[in-house]
Image (cartoon, rainbow, N blue to C red):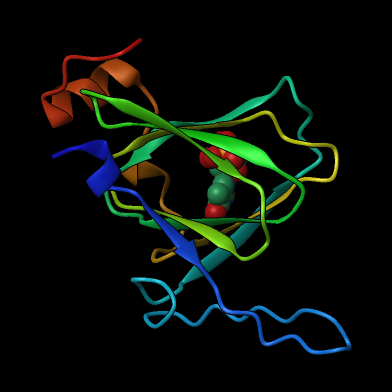
Length: 140
Ligand code: TYD
């Protein structure tokens, strides 16, 4: 399957009015899963590369609610780079994609929604192990 059919760019509605913007993300409605966990990443500078793992069970929606960052996704055969640069933009990532997040702007606040509670055992942090599990040829 082409990597472009695996991730999805979401565009959330804006319920804002003259008082300002209001963006709502409802689990299983605006995104493809019920939300079990929320975390956010900020204070990572432009040199830092985060992520560098794949997940067996977790799906994610990433939203730069402030600032910008880039996400590189890799399915073992091909890769894509997505820039998160709008508070209404979401990036849906299914399970078993290798991901790197990088080039965080100074004001970057990267909000992450996921369908699981944290379980370190469902993380694959070794790229060789990831390739083995997806049967991939590798890009690194
Ligand atoms: P890590 O997965 O390395 O963060 P990132 O994907 O942004 O690079 O997580 C850093 C540490 O925090 C690691 O020890 C695991 C822990 N952690 C939790 O305990 N719960 C969580 O929900 C997350 C995302 C991380």
